[in-house]
Length: 78
Image (cartoon, rainbow, N blue to C red):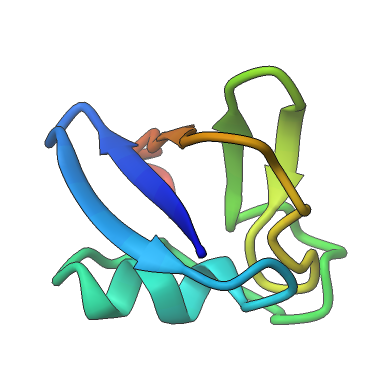
């Protein structure tokens, strides 16, 4: 298990490597905007500390030692 911390809300939830970040965010009571759910539109792009841009709809959580920090951005155009 790894701990995933969502910023700027500073909410932490436990997750399993390989799990969908969308599912983890939902469990934390957060919504990550989505568009196509195939990674083409990049509406679900978040920033994973130490990893950079990350498509939450198609990319499984990486195996990681320690905690992961996810920076959520809200694009008003979506």
